[in-house]
Length: 309
Image (tube, rainbow, N blue to C red; front, side, top):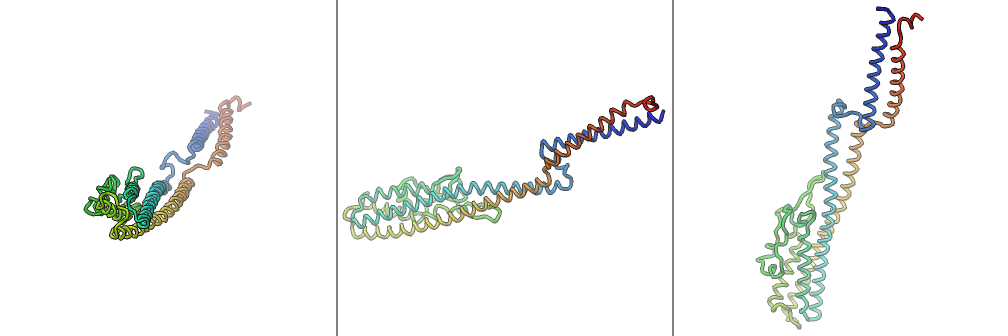
């Protein structure tokens, strides 16, 4: 075998090896450009794969909590509307009672009472995404288990009208669990006490309070007015606490969103390809590939005759 044939074979083999390497590098760079990832799978990241997995787990938990916070904000809005509506109903009835005392005429109170009961029952049977807002841990059913004023008046006690869990619904957004809303009994016992007793007073008078009112009826009505004022304050306090919680939850949702973005950047810095750098490398590798191919084509044509000439 001649020196020329040995040299040509050697250079052919080297050129083929270089071509395969350049082809593989181009294929990997084009994959990075398409997927925007440095490697196909976690194995490709070597020792950093465990870090990526850990951060991805943190991102999943953070995103789940952020979604919970967003949903919870909607629930707290529904809670605010319900508590505000119940407070307004208590105040409307209180003013109607005071007006009846002032006018010495209780004939319209039955209608006012019905409106207040309907508003209170609707408020505390509010649902959000299929869950009873004021039911505590019990998400099904209705917290107020009486459908009418007559049933309320006939109940053995105000406490017996509440169908709720023993504990409030709790949520943890990463800083410890907290109650998301009061149970119906915690916010509305005072109001339903008055509604129940006022209904019993009206029923005792034959279904309608008279005009003029008796002295005993005026005294009872004044007590009801005072109690309605206290019930309204309880509802407003609960509404205020709900508003503070809603602000805190909305702030937490923003914090969690920013935290997720930061964690995603950490993963991106490790796993994501720098597309500008990849594009530059593709261009350089293509030039290199073409040069190797041209050299291979030239060498493959060499013969002993070419060498001697």
